[in-house]
Image (cartoon, rainbow, N blue to C red; front, side, top):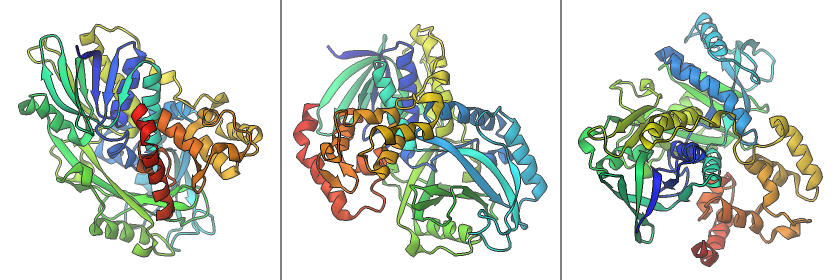
Length: 504
């Protein structure tokens, strides 16, 4: 007899993980399946921001912006280790949007939702200031405002961890190969990487497959009912740090788009993003030469020391699975989320397919999804996630600096760089990595610079890490700047741990 669940969630990105967490917290039995690693596609390829989306005001998406602005404060309180405030500097470009328009937009941005921890916008002089130093002399004034940074892939993992802690089953490297609707529920055929198949049943299905959402609609036998999907590629690259302060820049372009230059991993600056229609395999998406040239030209229109291709140390691209609102401009396609709830003739087992969405509003998306699903599942539990912290975020008053000071005191044998990274990655969970360690030697072999066996075992055992790529590019960002020989050492460690992996 196959395993039975209330809810099968297909897709281990931020929407799927958030919905699994919310559903499990309402007492529903939940299974989440992801064909690769958690956050292995769109959800690890974002611009790493929790933000209202200042430019969406120009497209009159006031509801989306308001909801996103409200979520900044909620998520900042839920995960202060992986989310923190960031000041944005917007230089005024005399040939583009006039000052009155920028000022009006920022006034709306400040007042569409209440702020508790984030300061409002203000005018800036760029003459002789730290904010103006990296810029061309022609940029003499501008504005600043606040949003938040987020470690996007870790946000997904934390939601999956909380879902699991509340009873959900999380299966990575597991593909939903088929869906068959019956009179009382869905039967799903699941296939692991080695080709083994199992069958499970669920009373309802959430299709949170991101770029593969229409493919899952087809597998459910509902292809003729699929809503329109618009795939838009967003690409980024990373260069050595271009400015000495911790602010982010937002640069306007003549085509109406903007690009960010964001402090990244202490020593680098992250630059992006593009908006390019995409019709290829989402698993094979890459930045192309035209996008690199576009971003270089855009930021070099502002920087006193121009960047070249030789400065790029890493790049990545992702595919945004947006709802097709028939807008001819890829940049103007709505970032709002759209639900497609199918209940057949009105009484058949439900499948909810999700189009679009932003990482900023994932929690509200999940909440709204459960508000639609709970009535058909006979569940009357209340909304709960708005006031619940994510794993590792339970630090006093959400004060990360105070928490970090305590870590350095308690683990005074741990090198400062590792202590800071562990605190940011794991929050209060860092004490579980090696609870009995009293010295650096107790962490086991240093497999790669600042990456010890204890942390690798922790990620493998508790966070579904199965490869060097899972660790170096999603659970951490240690792959950035790492030598190929060190990356291979981590790969070898996982290869030699195959028996431990098989046992889990």
